[in-house]
Structure formats: structure tokens, C-alpha cells
Image 1 (cartoon, rainbow over the protein chains, first blue to last red):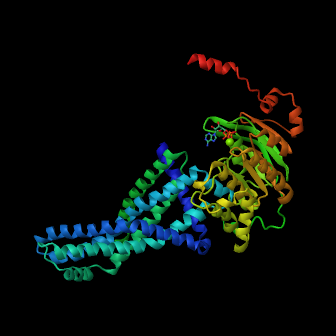
Image 2 (cartoon, rainbow over the protein chains, first blue to last red; image 1 turned 45 degrees about the vertical axis):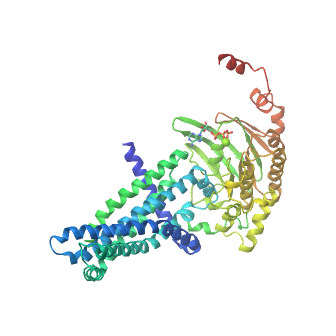
Image 3 (cartoon, each protein chain N blue to C red; image 1 turned 180 degrees about the horizontal axis):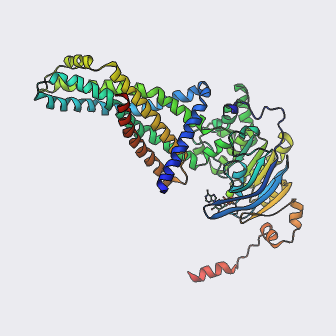
Length: 250
Length: 268
Ligand SMILES: Nc1ncnc2c1ncn2[C@@H]1O[C@H](COP(=O)(O)OP(=O)(O)OP(=O)(O)O)[C@@H](O)[C@H]1O
Ligand SMILES: [Mg+2]
């Protein structure tokens, strides 16, 4: 009962925080510097891992598809399979998961320690709403960066698939053929659907991270707990939302 | 909240704030930390609060700063409720936190510049002068490019006071401003508090354990005891008081033969 109460309270606080942050949208041009700073930070910290993970994600997909499709003699469809699963599902989900683990955790830790050290209180007494100074730039940054990261993730994943096709002997499909097949089966809307997903995931992860951080109370131990909580919550939210958005877009 | 654009300080009618506290009580869970506290602070007054550790002084200041919502009772600054975001921009208030509460991700300069910058209080070219002036008053201008983590406790406290000065508030709340400072710097702080009233027209509420500082600068003096205001009076009356609680607090006797510690020694 208590847990449900806590969850509802946190949820409500999250909604209010988001609403307040977006109510300050007119101030966005003035915080352009903070937005770009945060955007670079998000891209910078997550891109290397996104690159490595998505490359191997594409490779494994191609390999598995190659093994399965070999028996049906349908190996030319590897391009379609890898292309669509990366664009519609794995690209956005992988990027969101890395965002939660790499960026979300850092955001929660930073805001939680600001709360614990009375820095947030200091901002409040200065009549500088933390939503404007800390939350809005991060939300706008993630909105700007998510599509770019996801598109890069897709491209890297596709490339990983192509490399496997080209160099793994028993598949026997050239990278050229892989991309031709990908091109003819993966539609623009497949990619768009993925980008919409990524955008939603990104916003939700950032809201959860900021909200959990800002609501932290106590000391160093609580900061650690808050980080764990925000990552776990983000992962649950990503996979749950994934199902519903997929259904909605179908 | 877009209203926060209009600057509280450039208003022409900037005058010291009045604080009114009525029947304020605060409980955390089952523990009552403040019990039925009532007092007024007049505009321009220096109101000093002393009291034993844990008596609720910091909690009281946090209420005045609008950081805590009272369990019972009322509190207003110039007639406005400090806890509501809508009325926060009706007055300018600064709180020097017991811990300093500097923003750790910003340099000393940026910590001080944050408030005038966010509220667009002065043109960019005057900002630096304004910040440096405040740092110079506290003789800490050499640390302007340092990060808070690189400062000593006393330096951090001085930067926190400088940050409050830059805000040019109508109400200044100090939570133990001299607790980590050497006697000379503590005297400087006392001078600053007294001077500010003359120069900037500011109301000050000072929580302090420093008896000499408190008695020198206070217009009125309050003693807190277990979450209650034991008494409020001008310092002169306090020093003449025969109330045992007050006399013991103002003139603690150091008794090296204290039986309390004798029993500790023998029991171990
Ligand atoms: N957030 C909180 N939750 C629970 N109890 C609290 C909280 N803040 C303060 N208290 C309790 O309130 C009481 C008063 O604390 P406060 O910090 O106001 O003391 P103080 O008079 O400022 O003492 P000191 O001189 O040591 O700073 C203490 O018993 C403390 O345990
Ligand atoms: Mg205190």
C-alpha cells in the first residue's frame, strides 16, 4: 500500500515537474547554451557505447538470420530482416537503454546530490526554479539528440549486418545485395516509427531521471539508491512503452 | 512562472521586508520540532536568534525562507506567503545556509553571478564589478576562479555570504554565519551585517552561537529552547535578566570537576 502511495506521489511530482519545465519554454532561447551543452554531453557520453552495441546487434541479427534463412534458401531477405528490426525496434530501444544507463544515472546522481547538499534549496531561495535551470535544458537536449542518435544507431547496426554478410562464408551474401534488399523492403515509415519511439523513450527517461534525482532525500546512501531506482524505472518504462507504442503505430 | 522575469530588485519601492510569524508549529513524523512560535521582525531590524544545538533554529529559518511548509500556523513576508512559487518574486530574500550550499558544479564567480544573471539584474559589463565587489568585501577575491570543492570550510562560508550580498535582498537570513571563521573574520561579518542595514536597507535575521557578535549587532534578541521561543527582548534587557536559563546560556560556567564526566570516567 505504502509503495503504491509512494509511486503515485512520485508520478504526480513528475507530471508537475514536466508541466512546470515546459511552461518555461518561452525562456528556451535564453538557455540555448545550456541546451547545447547538455546535448553534446548526452551525445558524447553515449555515442561510443551505442556504436559498439549496435554494430554487434546488427551483426548478430545478420548471423542468426543467415543461419535460419539458409535452410529456406531465403538468405537474400537478411537485409530486410536486419534493416527493419534495427529501425523499428532495436535501434530505438538500445539507444534508450544506453541513455538510461549512461546519461540518466548521471543526471539522477547529480540532481540528487544537489538536493542533498541543499543546492536545490539555495536555488529556490534565489527564486530560480530548478525546472528552468536544470530540467528544461536536459529535456530539450534529449528531444534534439534522440533522433540523431537513433539514426546513427540504425546505420551502424545495418553496417554491422552488412559486414557479417560479406565476410561470413556460409551466408554468402554480398554487402551490396544486403543493402539492395534492405532498401527495397525497409520503408521510410519504418524508420519514422522508430524515431517516434526513440523520442518518447528519451523524454520519459529524462523525466524519470530528473524527477527521481530532485525528489531524493537523505544522504549519500540515498543518492546511490536514487540512481538504481531511476535506471530500473527507466528500463521498465522503456519496455512497457515499447509494447504500447508499437501497438499504437501498427 | 514566466513572471520571474520581472526583477525584484530593480523595483523602485525596494524596502526592507517585514516578517510575521504566528503560532508556527512543525512536526517531522511524530517529533515536534517547532512548537507555537510567534514573533514579528520589523523592517530594517537585526533580529538575532540563539539557542542550544538542536533547538530548531535552522528549521525556523527554513520556514521563513519558504523551504518548509508549516504543520500549523502562519508565516508571511510583507504579507506574502514565502512557500508559494507565485508570490516568491514579490520580495527578494537570501539565505546563507549553515553548510554554505554553493552550487558545486559552478565556479565561485558563476555561483555569485547566477542570481543577477538569471534575473537580468544588471548589464553583462557591470556583472563582473558587482561580483568582485562582493568578493572583496569578504576578502576572498583571490578564489574567484576556484571551484567550491577547492575551498576551505570558512572560505565556502564567506563565498556563501558574498553570494547573498550580490543578491541585494530585502531580507537576509544567516544560519550561523561565523561558525567556521576565525575571530577577525567573525568580527568583519558582524560589521557587514550592521553596515548592510545602513547601506542597503535590509532586514536581517541571524542565527548564531556567537554571543559577543549577537549582543553587539542585535536590535532584538531571541532565545530558542526546545522548539519554542523562550523570550524575545533587546540585548540590554537580556544581559540584565535573572532568568536562570538565560544567564546560564549567556555565561556558561566551565567546571572542570563536572560530576557528569566524573561518572563517565569511573563507569568505563
Ligand atoms: N528534515 C528533518 N527531518 C526530521 N527531523 C529534522 C529535520 N530537520 C531537522 N530535524 C530535527 O529538528 C530539530 C532541530 O533541528 P535544527 O537543525 O533546527 O537545529 P538547530 O537549532 O539549527 O541546531 P544547530 O545549532 O546544531 O544547528 C533536530 O532535533 C533535528 O533532528
Ligand atoms: Mg542549525
